[in-house]
Length: 79
Image (cartoon, rainbow, N blue to C red; front, side, top):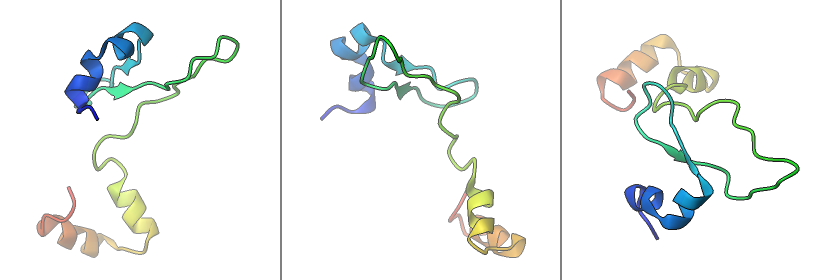
């Protein structure tokens, strides 16, 4: 088992070009799709969401109103 830093330093990951830039303003890189197919390579349409990027949207869909979200934020339960 490798931690994130070790993963991106591993010769196999480097050789296969599996480190994806997380994108502008994103804190960490991410690994690419591990399977390489010549006729149908992996396509990356967008980076993974940022930490907390969809929190309000998800919790609103789950039934939380703006007051509840503010309360959760005030308590440090969400960012």
